[in-house]
Length: 530
Image (cartoon, rainbow, N blue to C red; front, side, top):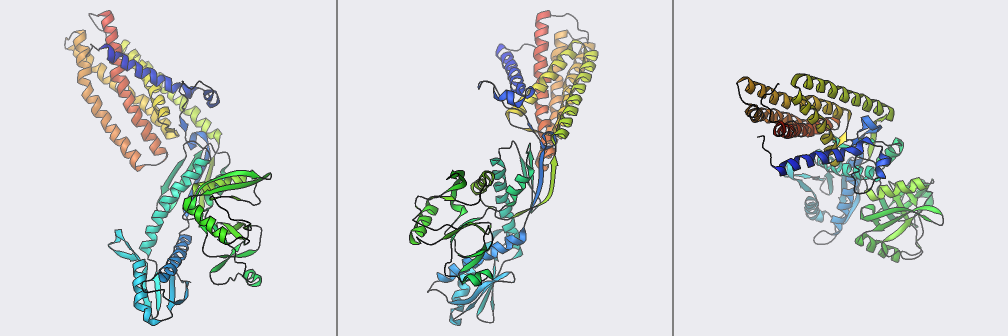
């Protein structure tokens, strides 16, 4: 037990040296660390919202709007299915959305069976609900067919939309360049967003609150302006508001949508801020074909149901790239580019709770946590030295190394330190010497039994290790449960506690044994006062 091979000694000291090296950047300002040579580690602990300050926003999905979007999508699917029905297109009238369902009237009652077959093929089974279909297809009065979305289908759509929304929100927040934001889903229809260090919470709200549904549609130049002003459009068209005021009629069917965008960047044209965009290959071909067939006609660029620009097609727009012009500022152009790059939200979000944490409060928490950590280390050190003498000194040295290792590992893995994390850090310091207390007391017992110094030390470490590992395994299990079921600060506490348990066992058992081994082989003591 006291004979440690040279390679193990070197391995232990190298681990300790690396822990110290990777923890050092945390003791210097971020700006100073950025100027260090690339060979040196630069990663620092990420501070959570409660320590660094920032924005806390709770968002809720607008399910009523999602229901309406699903109905409009279903209407388009019904149109396409009726056009492509087996045996030829099925003639219908009065196709539209009414009272939460899509319905249409058959022109020829002889098409009833074909229409029902086509609509039932359109209805998709909900796999998790034992084959139930969504929407439900109903025949009314022998010639009217009704498609009614089910509540189970809506719940499934909400679940899928929320999963996609979390990813879109994450991409938008990441575009702001913030460090370690917290973006988690809460319940069925809410998303919690915490962004440490954000100076402009209003910009975050605007960024997250926009759906960013981008559509390119042809303007209906044949629509009667008087009817358009009344909100009425010809069949196949719709009335859309203009960003600068007024209304315009556009074709319902989009040329291309934002789903086919692969990049967008803010730039300048003739000294004015604009947004450049680029489609994927399929979207680029379709956009080029439509603009080639409609030279001289205007088309509308629609963002979240509002026309932000309606330029005229002077020549075919080939290559899948273009420019969005409008009354942009540099900030609004950059915001639009971020929205388009991150993709549209499948459901709009509403801010239902907002909190801003100032950096002063975080600084006070850091100061209080630092004081608590220093006081705990000093008191534990005094107790260990007074109780165990030389072996207490080794325990204190291991305790300090444990703190460096903990900071170093958290910096390397990019962990976020929160106020509960500081509590976990302090708790780790207090618990770190438990292993040394067990070892030292075991050595005392062995000395009372008349064992030699070597035998007492070896038996003390050997017999205490089982108890030490068992005790810490139970702590890790508790931490794992907190990490799995908790969120935000609770997870931060669990992470710090878990890493602290691992480093404390390493330093308390392995490092102190290395120190004791070196002392014993140098001094060869005949007696030990412990």
